[in-house]
Image (cartoon, rainbow over all chains, first blue to last red; front, side, top):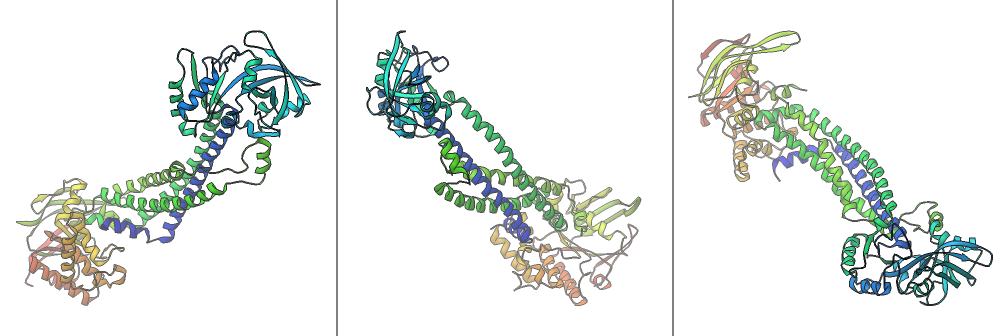
Length: 409
Length: 229
């Protein structure tokens, strides 16, 4: 170990209590940052999965312009073939074709305007969570049967239940009347009022027949293995699309623009809070190093008189700060990593969370996402901030003169 | 060749609203292998002259040469380098680095000079032996007597074989026995290594070791005489 490093290390332990207090502030803030950032990332992941998984998926293949103006005639021709090609081309089973139409649904006593989605019963459970959220009856299982599942609020509004018949009346793709009588086989509760109030799903083939779709549909939903793979899956999907049909691939940000905005707004608030935490730690380090420099003015005068340049002296103080920072970083990452890892396995909840989860169909526990970013981003910023805080004490040394310094008490 | 040459040095300090003259036209040449004592009452300019000779402080005017090179106009960084290569300091209050052992304190200057570690250790060990501190290499200053600490300071001052050692009241904090030992050590190093010593003191015992005695008053040299030791 070089003398400079030895000197810096031993200087730290001249005031062990002060060093531990400063390092402790860093460790505490690092543990807190690791946990909060991991929890935040985990929560976003859950939010995204919950919102996208419920219905829209990560990606959708549509006719260009359909997203902005959902007219029944803007179709993806031979949609089940397109979905099949995407499934085999992407190597993913979480790809499902859909058709979509608006219609009037009449029960024995009431009529409501609804949004009907034709789905592939075999593949829809891999593309959205609605099949798993059926809380009365069952999900669709026959591709051609005149069956329907409806949202819980819609069922209440229609005063209908599983086993009842609904009469569907709408406008078909060719302009003719689309009419059908279907059996309610299931009622789902997505936790999202917008879906539960107006959405109904029927088998795609029966939908195509009812609405004269001639084999066409409106969207192929794709769920990528994870958020980080969305971009590459989108690129590949684009290359697999049949040419000349004016089809486009929309990612989840196009489909749910509010979601990313909500996350970004939340991030800004969080960064502000984290910034305050880092600044507090910086002041703690500044205080420690300034005290330490002021206390050792005479000693610095000695080493300057021996021929140490003020630049090297400044680097010595910087090295001391780096060493405290490394203690804070190492202990903070270790403790923060262990604690967050425990919560990553067991989940994090608080009183009242279960009721809220039941109400909104969100997980009743949040699972922090411990990865390289959540583990190191906060501690590295704290470390950099601490080193930055040593600049002022270092700068003071630049103007130190050996004679005046040695005269100081 | 001279170890140090000063020409017409002037230095004034501010003390409150008053100007205090530290040096008033001091010219001095210290020959190689010299053993010079600056004597005067307190406040007559000894320490100011030592600081100017050692490049620790700049005179208001005049010139200072160390080992033939003018130093009063050097930049701060070059002055530090000059001190590192040419001058050893011994202070009244020992001024060792408290967190380093005796050995490490002696090695410190050589470390700054970039001397390789094995060479550093060898020379530091020799220097400590020379000042009679064998066996205390790993002791920290707080565990040593004043006399021992001052010997470490001497070892630190001579280890890099400087052209000149400047000592400011080196015996002021020592008992008479330690002070005699220290001066005998200085004389021996001067004799064996040919190191030049300039010592500021008002201790008659210290002066008795000097080959040349310079008396200062009010920032001026008022007497400069050789003496038999």
